[in-house]
Image (cartoon, rainbow, N blue to C red; front, side, top):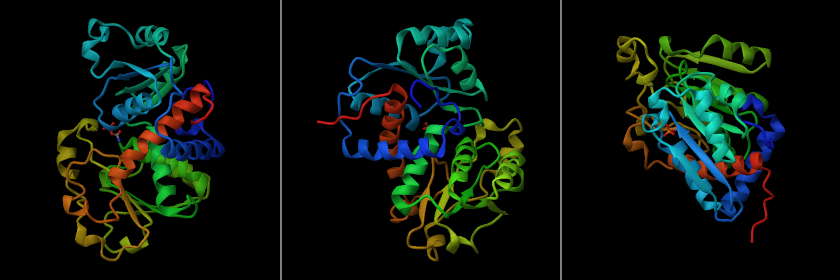
Length: 306
Ligand code: CP
C-alpha cells in the first residue's frame, strides 16, 4: 500500500483490507495525533460531496496535517480550460497525497498515471468508491463481529451505484450471500454478476424485499442518483421504488444493521433513524477513522501514539 495510489478496491488484497481495518480500530482509539505533521493532503472535488471530503479533511486535521484543494472546479484553472493532466501534475508539486472525486469513470486511474504523488479515488463516476467500501467493511465488522458468511442486501440503484460495485468486489473475499433488490431498470450490471460467478459467490435478485427481511444481516440502502441518468423519465419511473419504513423492520434479526453511504433522499424514512438497527450516521463517523488509516498506510506512517 505504501506510496501506491488507491484507485479501485481491487488494488488491495484481502490482507491489505484487513490491515486497513486493524489500523482504523487503532485510530478510533487514538483519533488525535501528530502523525501527519509537516504533510499536506490535497482534496480535489470536481463533484459535490459532504462526507467524503469532510471526513478526509477531518482525518488530516486530527493527525496534525494540512489540507489544500478545491470544492468546486469552477474556482480553479479548470474553468480556463486546464486539463486534468496539468491540474494533477501541478497539485502534486504542492502535496504529499491527492484525494480526488471526478464525474468521469477512469479519471482516478488516469490521474494516478500522471501524478508524482499517490492518488486516492474519492469516487469516479459510476465506477468505484474504494474508501467508502473500506469504511463500509469497518462498519460491518464492528456491528457483526465478522466479515465472513453474511447475508448482504444491496437495495436501490445497483446499476449506477459505485458504492455497491466496490462493496461487492471487496466482500468477494468473505463468502457472502448477496440479495440484489432493485427496479428492473437499475439491476446489478452483468460484469459484477460474472465476477461473483467466477468466485462461486451466491446471489439472488428480487424486485421487493418485504417477505425476505428476516434473512438480512446487513441492509445496504442506496439513493437513486438523479445525476447519473441520461433519460430523466427513467429517473422519474424508478426514484420512489424503495422506501424503508420503521414498521418494515419488525421481523429482522437482532444483529441486522441498516447501512447507507448517504446522502439519502427519501429511501429511508426518518422514523427509522431512532431504531437501534439504523447505523448510517455511525457509519459516516467510521469514515474518519478509516480514512486516517488509508492515509497512514499510503504515506507509510508508523503508528506511534503518545
Ligand atoms: N458517501 C458519500 O460519498 O457521500 P458524499 O457524496 O457526501 O461524499
